[in-house]
Structure formats: structure tokens, C-alpha cells
Length: 234
Image (cartoon, rainbow, N blue to C red; front, side, top):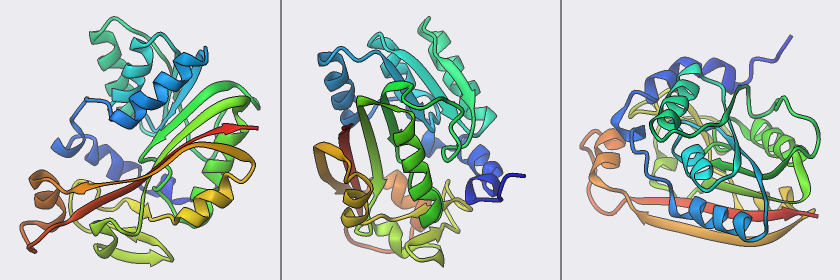
């Protein structure tokens, strides 16, 4: 029997979040496009999008000609991704699974991306999910991660359930666990990888984010803070 990890008890919360305006944007993130360009330049071909969400990054990968695999734990995400790809007359292989239990053999993919995915869970789950993703990556393959840092203003919101983990009580992601990882933790997890690109990316929260997460409360600058990492498996 599978353990009741945070991903298994928040499926309904994710289904609700996917219907929100906050997660409706299908514009790919610039850092993911940067990752795709690296893969293209090196002739990589098979890429897994872990936690495909609304499909925006699976679409980007498919548009660039990659053999694209889209994975998510919710049926809604897979349906949204499939519909978005169909609009552009493109295809990807859809898989419903949890990020800590990927149903693929060792060293299957040339590339793997997780955009704001691996920060959903507690510390042990985040660690296990990253290690599991490393397992399915080929030697010489590249992995991209984007994760929230403790500098993010949302680190002060919600219920502190476990060390570094909050469960938001407001906004589109209410009821969903968020883990705020440190740079040292990331560097330790990737000690057997070669780091190609590691950035602290920060920006002021826009009005939509402030409205959703603060419900109009609070004044002053609010910072959105993420680490983006690209690393290759030795």
C-alpha cells in the first residue's frame, strides 16, 4: 500500500488551483526556454516535464521538436495539457503518476524539468522526489528545477506544518504544502552532478499575486524568490 504523502492528500486542492486565474497563463517561463536551448544545442531528444500543470512547458518542448513526456498526479492537468497540445497540432506522452514514484526505467530521459513542482511536499518527500528524478535521467542528461526560497514573501503565510513547510490557508494554492529549500540543501542533493547554471531569481509580486495571497492586506514590496538550477548527471 502506498504511503499517504502530502501529494496524495492534496489532489482536490490542486484540481481547484488549476481552475484559478493564477494558473491560467500558458506563456512559458524564460528559464525553461533557456534550458530547452541547452538541450537543443547538445542534440538531446527525450524530455520529461514533471508536474506539467496547464501544459505550457510541455507545449514549449513539443514545439521545439523534443520527444515530450508530460506527467502529473491530477487528471485535470493531463487533460489541460492534452488540449493545449491539440490546439497546436502537437503531441506528447501523458502519464498520471506521483513525482516520488516515476513509472520509468533507470536512465530513460535526456532531459527533465520540474518548474515549481518539487517544492510541494515536506522535506523527506522533496528529497525523495528529486532523487527519483535523478534516477530516470540518463548519464550526460540535464535536469532543470525551479524552487521557492525562504526569501519569498509567502514564507510568512499559512500554517507552518513542518520545518520549512507551510500549508497556505488563502489564495489559489490554499491547502497545498509548500517547502522552501535552502541553497545548501540543493547543492547537497546535486553533489554528484555538474552544475551548469544556478541562479537566485527574484521579482516584485504583481497585483494578481498580492490579491490572491494577501487578500488586499499589507503594504510595501513583496518579493517572489526562486532558485533555478540546471545540472548534468555525471
